[in-house]
Length: 405
Ligand code: TRP
Image (cartoon, rainbow, N blue to C red; front, side, top):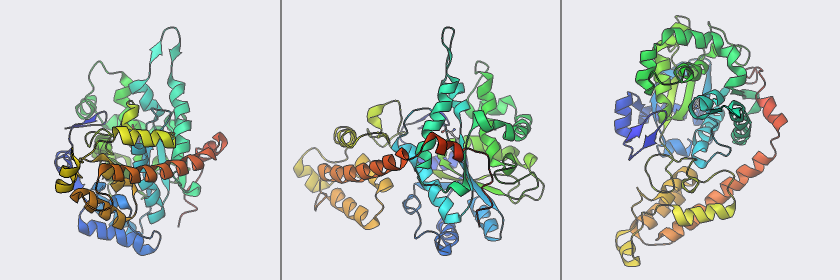
């Protein structure tokens, strides 16, 4: 298994990963605490299915953060996206769907970083004839921003920014982080070496900076004396950035800050590619992913042809043994996207035992196709209404705190 900020592959053992990274599994008592502060406050009807089903499964300091928020400390959410492709896929949606729920459930401001700078440094190019493609990444930011806004965030409490555009306000904190972290540390965490361009080595500080409220003097009306706590929902492959951040955090805040400046984290597992429950979905293999731009026919074809089946070879075997749900991609995807717990359980029971309405792969794929056609169509409808002008409004530096309670 390989999991780092640049590669996810192999069969992932999440318990081992938590051990290796040094984060913590979300315990039942922490889940109860989170439920009390969200569902208990009447802001959301139930815990998100990603929590009910263990997709968000690991954390750092979430317990301490919740205790302090309960006692009245201000907090905000921070997440982000590297805009590397024109069209986002279902896997990219996971952290944003969950962040939207957290925003509602906790009623807090949210900042979303678009790392167009990162994607240029890692994937961009320079050509002697045609120049470089930096600005392509900036336009991908605008495209992806529309998909993110379409997830339903609250405009009054959300600030979306492109690094290329907003970096100035964060710069004092970026410089502080640069000063606090050595090249050896960054190389150790991210695997860079002397042949890496110097932007790669500098970039982790730019992803770290939004973890500090003082990077948002206007947006969060914060300064270095602020007590704001930061919670970062992200896939667990982003954890290395925030381990680095947490190690130097005390240098960026005042001595009384509740978490010594450290951002808290809540980590998700990866969304499996169509071909099988290993690694994570990738944009570069179009048959491994369902894109938010796919047509109903694309969705149907990809799932029918490519979704890895845990079903058996013959009808007889399927009826005797049932499907292997662990490796069955259609079933695993339903765990992410089918909201109804009772229906999911029935499908699991039928398919896993080879009997009843959903006894075989065809039936299960059919239901998944319905679910995803609906989800993608609704997303496309919302996205179509979002103009460039609208995106610019979300990206305008403005206070997002006065509207929060
Ligand atoms: N590096 C992330 C990516 O490539 C983008 C990102 C920036 C991010 N800041 C973040 C992701 C905070 C999660 C949380 O997609």
